[in-house]
Image (tube, rainbow, N blue to C red; front, side, top):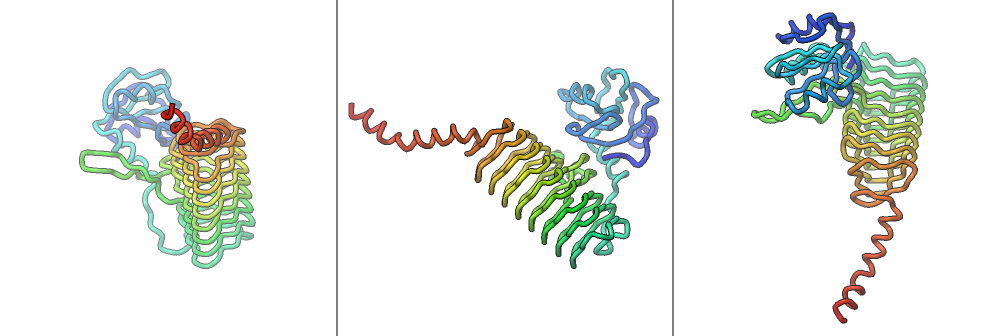
Length: 311
């Protein structure tokens, strides 16, 4: 998530009661978990073995629970509990504000958009020209919807990320500071659910079409002109490149990449990165030609074993 205005790192240090190490002249322009960081971002780590990854990332300001050597051009903020400090910043700059009307006065809706009855539109939502939002759709805070987008009845866009910090007391929910961004000419089927990012954006690329009851996890990026059939589930932080086809009931785990033009056949389970331009089948998914040969070989296995033991 981006901050409304750049904030001096010294001011951030005061906010969270941190010891400041490194460049004291820096400014923070955003807050992001490590998977989405960009220059100017604040991120955190509370496990020493991951310090190096955080310090070598694009993040400019890193919240840690131990002092360490700070790379040039960065700053470290040392606190006892980095997660709490990080989450407190997200909550400060993206506070929870319940809706008191079906359509927030802070939503920006193009006059050519069609909004059917019982649609709920939260604070900071932007809806572009010639969109068609069918009845009973929910659009969560800060969602950005481009032009010529159709969202069918009952879809739920911009719900909280399913993301928790495990502590001694149980699971602590992160404040979801990210957004959902839906580009132009996208169609979203009835009953689909799309989570916003933890701190970055969940993106649905231009021209992509989704059937009913598809779930997109937090921070996933769906490319342009993809086809996603019914009951597909895509885990958080996964990247689906352009022109990918996912047939019905495909499951894709979190944080993998499916290459451009890949086709994943119905019921497959994607548990690793897949190259583009190939067809895949099975669980775990593999190239369909390989999987079909394996299935053919299995059909001959009883006869093979019978002949083998008859010798």
